[in-house]
Image (cartoon, rainbow, N blue to C red):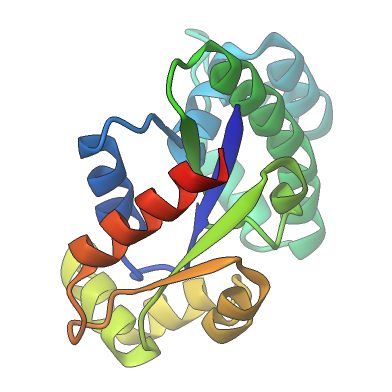
Amino acid sequence: MMIIGLTGGIGSGKTTVAKIFELLGIPVYYADDRAKLLMTEDEQLVSEVRQHFGDRAYNAAGELERKYIANIVFNDPAKLALLNSLVHPATIRDSEVWANRQNAPYVIKEAALMFETESFHHVDKVICVFAQQALRIQRVMKRDNVTRNEVLARMHKQIDESIKAKLSDYVIYNNEQQPVIPQVLALHETLLKLL
């Protein structure tokens, strides 16, 4: 089973591209969504989070206390790195189990932090969805109803978009100048030929 990584900076349009692949019958693993579930469903991960962040990390119903965790990790880069070092291996394990259950020519693993977490070592090829920073800022401000500075703060936690593009095997330009669907269709055909 060939696993294709799909990445790009915040506001680049990764989800839009992932949905197009899904319309082509390609299963997509959404790493951020799965990570949130794993933090309450994966017993090993829950145990590790409790060990490092205390029992207050979860409420009596076993749900993650997101606000409590966020207050810790976003004020302490070392704690954020620690949390990531727990969550990312769990997500990689989960994505590999998921991929082996799929019945498709290849699968997509969508992850914003593909290179930042070294998840790219666990995929066969990487696609970067690229858009200029100004356009990405506009999209995220509108989508999340946040300020420009809040978007920039999120962007600073990710590798620069142009570096992601250079590190990737393929680039899809989502800059409102080139239609995205024909790019995805052409890339789908390219990936099928690799099998």
